[in-house]
Image 1 (cartoon, rainbow, N blue to C red):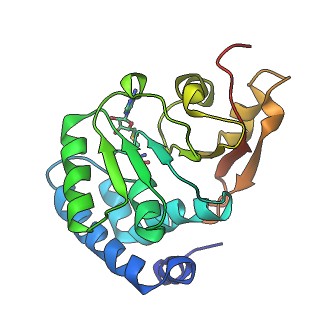
Image 2: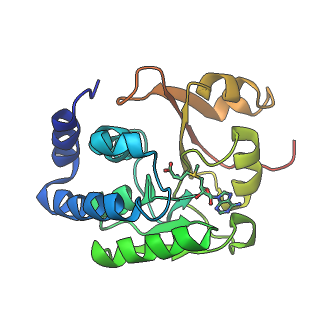
Length: 208
Ligand SMILES: C[S@@+](CC[C@H](N)C(=O)[O-])C[C@H]1O[C@@H](n2cnc3c(N)ncnc32)[C@H](O)[C@@H]1O
C-alpha cells in the first residue's frame, strides 16, 4: 500500500521516470495556485497530493495496457487524465470536461506541462463525437450504470475500462445486469485500502 508522500512519488517515478516527474511537479504547483481560485480538489488533500491524486491516478496504468485514444471522462482537476498523459507521452489522451472554468484550467495545465499528446474536449460527454477508445477512465464522474450508458458508444471489444469507484465499487458492479456484468471485476486501490477500481475489457451495449 502506498502510504506516504515519498512512497507515492517513488511509485510514480518507478513507473514513468524523471521527465514525467518534472511535468507532474509543474501540475502540482499550478494546481495549488488554481485551487485558490476555484474548487478543483478538496483543500485538505493538497498536503497529500502525490498519494491522493497523482499515485491514485498513476496506478490505473497497472490495470490496463495503455492504448490510444485514452478517454478520460469528467476530468475536472485533471485526474487521472493529466497524470496519464504526463506518464505516457506516446499515448494520445482526450480529457472530456463540460464546465468552462475547468476546461480553461485543463488547457492551461496542458500548455504549462508541455503535453503534446493531450487534447481537451470542452463539452458535455453527450455531445462528443464518437471515437473508438483504447481506454476509458473516469474518477468521481457518475454512478457506474449511468457512466456506462453515457460512454457505451465509445467502446469496442478491445476497450479497457479503469474506473476508480471508492468503497462502492463491488456493489456498483453487482447492480449491473447479471448477463453483462462479468466483463468487469474489482481491483483494490493501492492508495486507499477501502477503495476499489472497476476494471474491464470489452464493448458495453447501451441496450440490455
Ligand atoms: C467530481 S468531478 C471529478 C473530477 C476528476 N475526475 C477528479 O477525480 O478529480 C466530476 C467532473 O465531471 C464533470 N462532468 C459531469 N458531467 C459531465 C458530462 N456529462 N460531460 C462532461 N463532463 C461532465 C464535472 O464538471 C466535474 O468537473
